[in-house]
Image (tube, one colour):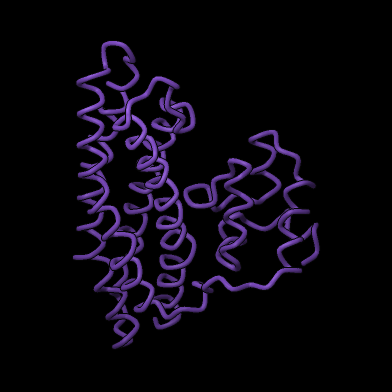
Length: 233
C-alpha cells in the first residue's frame, strides 16, 4: 500500500483490513477501537508519535505471510456468534475474577498503596457497565443483525442502538485507560504479593481482549450491518 494513502486511512479501517496491524498500533499506544475513526496521521499527531516510523512498520507487514483470520470477510451472523462465544464469554469469566482480586488486594494493601482503592472503584464500574452492555447486544442488536442477514428483513438494525452501544464502548475504554494509568501500565511494585501480580496481569489481558472485542464491533460489525440495512431499503 502507498505510504501516503496509509497515513490518511482511518486506523480502524487499517486494522479491519489486517488484524496483524493491531499489534503495531498497540505498541505505539494508538487506539484503534474507540478512536478508530481518526486517520493514522491524526492519531500519531495526537500522541506525538513519529508517523513515518509507524507507517514503515505497517508497510513491513505486507512482506510477511498473513496467517491471521480476516474478520473483515466473515459473514455478519457468523461474526456475531464469534464475538459472543469468544469475547462475551471472556468478559463474563474474567470480570468476576478481576473483581475478586481487586477487592482482596485493596483490602490488604489499600492503606499502603491507596491507588488500589481507585482501581477497585473503576473495576466495579467496569463490571457494572459491561454486564449490562453484553445483555443489550445479545438481546437487542445481535438478533436484529441475524434477522437482517438471514431474512433480509429491513428496519431491524437501528442506528440509535448502534450509537448507544458505541458510547458504552467509549466508557469502557475510558475506564480501562484510567486503570492502566493507576497501575503504571499494569506494572506491579517490586514488593507486590502474588495476588497483586495476578490482578495486574488479568487487567492487562482484559484490556487487550477488550481492544479486539470493541474493534470487531465498532470497525467491522456495526458499520457493515448499517450499510446492509441501508442497501436493502
